[in-house]
Length: 267
Length: 270
Image (tube, rainbow over all chains, first blue to last red; front, side, top):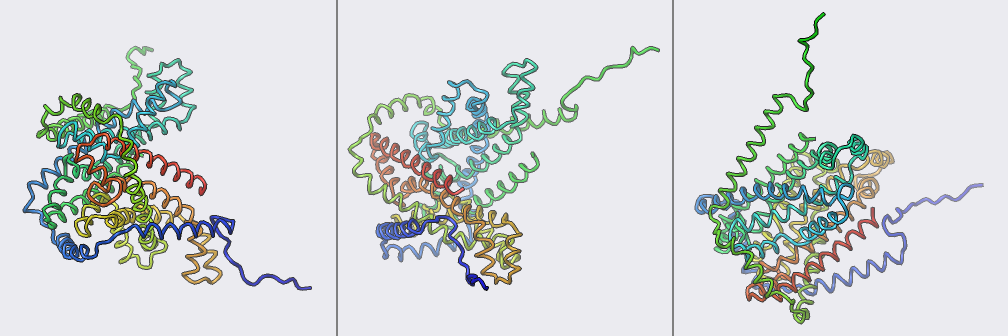
């Protein structure tokens, strides 16, 4: 009376249970890869010619030249940093009323729809495209960059703040309402203490993002360190470009660690 | 029994010392803001800024209606954009997965040498935006979608690597111990103990990054890395605002569709 137990075991598929679908998806992926890789056109002569530049770039990265273009670099860096800070402050200040207005539990329906629309527009447009328009409207320089980053900050903070307000503990709001508080008092005593730590954390996070973006929007003329980087690359001064990239990496790493530390401290 | 001199304490939210500190903090913030604002606007030409409403009205009147007939020349760049994003994401995944296993503290083969190197690569590739990578790669490889694919891939390494190594570090140790107790080899522990636990988050992260990459690959053409951004750049240089308007609408549509797809897929996985 011995039952024949199987002696081997195969791991069952984890994601897609049906065998037919798995084969179909794999075939589709292979066909797509063939089509997609077929569209890559490589000019090998150009690539080989570019290898010499790649070597110079690597050399420039290993031996960065901070001194020759230091005036451009320091100007760009100053612009980037000031632009980052001012745009974060103004963006957060504007996004607080918008975030409150976009929270379903505290705002009337009409206000809610308007605020959600503002947030959606600000989130759907990439920073670069917004920067192109602001440069066309306000001229080259840091002011256009400041407006771009402010605009992007509104969508980011507004959305996350609105979601936070919608997730609050309703009991506290109920308690404040029961005292006969006005709407302003409700926001100030029931909502604000609950979302403040998160808001500070989000603002610090956005400060970090805004610095990264400020390095990019300079490429389309909105000032900052990106403009310096673009100039040095188009002059083929790879050692200056290496220096600028190292500065960007260093500041981003510093911002990331310190904002992570600050956020822990705020909590 | 006189109790006239007993003062009732007034309740306050903060101690005087705290209030002073808070006030000083706010003052410092405002001062920093004013100083930054002065520095930033030093070289601003205010005439342009005050003229902005006129300029906006001017551009707006030129940009409408969008030039719909231009659409037939946009399908090929749109396909290129999709390919840049997809192939770039795949290449990024291929490089990020080994890095993530090297960087996670519970799977790394050497804590002292390989882990710091892997962590540095992850941070360094993440802090450089794909547009900057594209700028570099275009000047090295020449214009075309290859530079775009590599730029997207390099930027994705850091993002996928970071989220994936955090997922690996959060795996349940008991499942790994159970597999180890059967006498499994290192490779078997990985495939049966850790991979099944991180697979859902791996798919989620990949689709999320693909969605972001669609957005980013749409603008890489501005610096010559192929895709619909190249059309945007040439239309902008010709000041052909109706074409610019159409391209921006197309980019917006693509972004909305890719966001919808990624939300659907992530919802199905999790």
